Amino acid sequence: MNEFDDVVIDIQKLSFSRGERSIYNEVDIKIPRGKITGIMGPSGTGKTTLLRLIGGQLKPDRGAILVDGENIPELGRSDLFSVRERMGMLFQSGALFTDISVFENVAFPIRVHTDLADDMIRDVVLMKLQAVGLRGAHNLMPSELSGGMARRVALARAIALDPDIVMYDEPFTGQDPIAMGVLVNLIRRLNNSLGHTSIIVSHDIQETLGIADYIHIIADSKVIASGTPEELRQVDSPQVKQFMHGLPDGPVPFHYPAGDYETDLLRGQG
Amino acid sequence: MNQLALLGHVALSKLAAFGRAGMILFQSLVAKPQPLIMFPLFIKQVYFVGVLSLIIIVVSGLFIGMVLGLQGYTILVDYGSEQAVGQMVALSLVRELAPVVTALLFAGRAGSALTAEIGLMKATEQLSSLEMIGVDPLRRIVAPRFWAGFVCLPILSAIFALVGVYGGAIVGVEWLGIYDGSFWANMQNSVDFYDDVLNGLIKAVVFGFVVTWIAVFQGYDCMPTSEGISQATTKTVVYASLAVLGLDFILTAVMFGEL
Image (cartoon, each protein chain N blue to C red):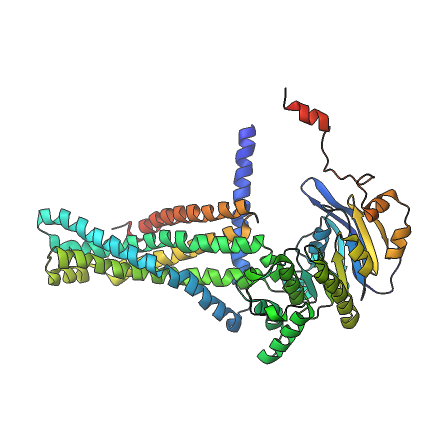
């Protein structure tokens, strides 16, 4: 694994399990500052779980998650909330507040954490909405938006306070090709101009490869490969190859663990 | 042996839930006061929880008062003491029916709505996104709803009693022709502020605390699925109703037991 000069999130020997099922087993992940890092892997490998662990919404069984040197699992409630002020997160469902308008959703973090005047807040919110192409929708309620639009509003909300770290959970899912292209550019541009660190969880291989500076591929509770997109394209490991090329047959099983297919089908006749 | 283990498991999980409920209440209520942020949220919830419950409370109060007046009259008239209808209506409303029936209606109308709302916020990741924005959902979502329920139930109970007394008067005085002087005078002489009104109010305060606590806890602690939310709403109504009836007996025994 490459060593970075400046690491913003340093995950050391992380273990996490849900019930009997191990999601992570002694995993080390480093996220470089100011870059776009992609976390890829088949669904069900715990990519979203990783974001929740970094955000402190889940506690690991063992291991450390250092964000700027602060160990998230050991922080108290109020310290955790102040660390989260520096993070923005785009949820898979968007998770907009359904009782307030699009405008108020984006204004929410600004109102909570700053003392800006109302006309200033209005300008900031409209600029953020303009960036995601939805300035004209600022009066709508979340129930009037399509899934893709809701995700873009949620993105505007996640970047409303210009956080140091932005975590994107499946930002490309459900977007039409035009919005997808705009989003890819937007994430790149935001990252370059604001200098924050972006973490993208996704299984959209081409988009993530095109945008990320660095990628970790997760499978079987472990990081199976890390590197720049070019390095990953060169990797010989069959597991990585299978994932990068989307092949159904290979070491990564498509099927959830199950008994023998034929016996399972025939059992009903007994 | 398995039965015993199962019993132990059920007891432990109930105890753990009780502990979580206590923690949630503690963390939402014990924090640095932020009146400028909290007050508007509180007022909004007072509207949803209290003001919108007014109609069901007023209508129920009116009918229960009228039924009490009618039933009381048909029994008391045999003994020639129909003037005591006012006393009977007022005492049964103020001591028992107003706090208990208000709490039961409140659990069904407002409690279930609170549970479903908070549960849906959890299922749609709104609580998670509040957390990630750096806002404590216990303070922002749970606390204003809890305080609103706690404050509104005693007021609703007082309104219930008031409307009920008028309902009794409509039937007793206007319809059945009890002399209104003795109807109101008997009531005034027999209802004591400390023994009756205040004790009834204490009951309403206790019920307000318990019903709202159960409602917000069930919402916050539910499984974030449609089945989980429906179970949580049912639990809110069932647990809150049972808690109200059980506590009512205990409170009555303490307040009026030595009479």
